[in-house]
Amino acid sequence: MSDPAFTLPVHYLRIIADQVRSLGADVGHWLARSGLREASLDDPELSVPFSTFRTLVLDALVLTREPAFGLFVGQRLQANTHGILGYAAQSSGTMRQALELFERFVELRLSALSISSEVKPDEVRVRFHETLPLGDIERPVVEAVVMALRNVVDTISMGAVRIGVVAFAFEPPDYPELARELFGCEVLWGQDWTGFTVAPEALDFALRMADPAAYAEAARILQRELERGASSRSLSARVRRLLLERQSGFPSLQVTARLLHMTPRTLHRRLIDEGTSFRELLEEVRHTLAVEHLKSGRFSIEEIAYTLGYSDLANFRRAFKRWEDVPPSEFRARLEAEAAPPARTSWRSGR
Image 1 (tube, rainbow, N blue to C red):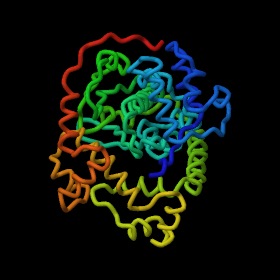
Image 2: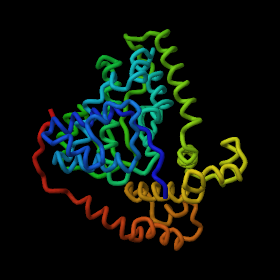
Image 3: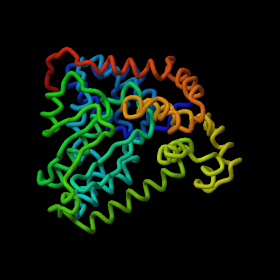
């Protein structure tokens, strides 16, 4: 399977490098393990594939010996670190407008996650979804991004909009007290969603830094950037995102081609040119969702198979064993064993 299309502006790598350094690790050594040099981080055109980003994150965890590394990186991701996107958010008229900005344009900053808002009578859930399978770097990356958007909410509202709770779909780490301290609110683990809540009235909270003209211009710049990227962004990334958005009933190759305004033959040919195929992408999305469903614990294995479009449970079991080397029942058993309360260890500050 080809390396998934991945977007991460180089200045975020510099922020990660600063955190590696602040925790006493050798940044040069950290980068060299991925074939990079510190001078590389000064190149605004530097683009790393997902496989390199994964190695950098895993090596940062090992070299710093800080399991909460993602949270500390997230602390550094303040509103002004997101460039024109952060500027547009700070110029927004309301919190609703700012959140909609991030929903539309977050892929310009990190293509591995998307954001959506779910309005309920007593709360608004700002939800984060994987659009690329993060695998073994899910926890640090998701923790960093949730913290980053929490920082934006705090900054643009000048502390007036408070986060209700933060929720993560994965199991508790060995630093739950630290997470609560850094987020400044209750943190829930093992949930069936990831993100945070705000009160419904917060959506229309008038922001004191609102500047309609500045917001409109920044939004135009972001839209142009998005449109430029749409033509150069890999087609496989667009197909993957489309499949994830319609996971309740995956579209066929023919329907997908129609949604992308091309013929099935053209779609097939262009995916082959990118080193993949519609079948491979559907398999990748099914793999990602299967793991997410098993982690959530909400569905039986039979229900997961049906949800992912397998009419035969045996076919799903064979596919899952091909992906993870174990059948889904054993995978779930391992997750349950790992969810046992860990031995409590001390944590140290990243500041």
